[in-house]
Image (cartoon, rainbow, N blue to C red):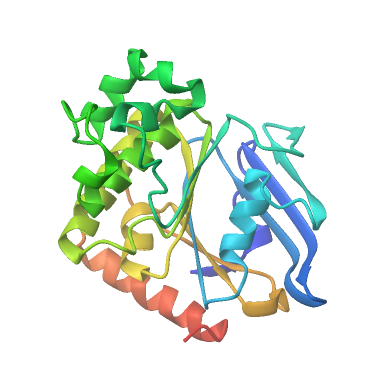
Length: 255
């Protein structure tokens, strides 16, 4: 069932509570009257038409964009800058080409961080065991994004933000990376906020799907995905929920 965003997610104390009264570019509103919360360990996907403010919202939460009217609370504390409690994974891996895989993962500590014991553990978790000394140019696109995810987890964030992280890889690699992310979120107990244009990706990974409308004229709609994770892609329940998401996207004029 589709609900206004304000009606869901109030049962437990939120890890993230973000309010954006207004965010505009050249006087054109992108986000307005938006309220979003995430509970600890929850996975939420943001979907909607291009330009509806999904990536902008991630940048606000990450502290990369402070030119807005509103407030970001993380565990009840006002956030005004970048914090190690929030990891950000971009659409492209954005690895430093002159650093090895291990140095990229531990970039938070400088080049000496490659010896940190957490590095090989994370590389093993993302399926890159033994590749710590490789350079980014020696990696495939999927491998490079795995390094980016390991780097995002290195600081042990409480919240992980992902901006269409799998859009640049082929379909089979995308499925493998989705399954890997689902497992990592469960093992690390990290809350995840994911921007995606892929409805099936949102359904497979998320506890809730938030549908944004361009310009923020209408409040976001939320669709709960009340299925245990990890979940099967072929299930009839997902097919039913997919119809609900598509209906919400049409309501938001995204399709």
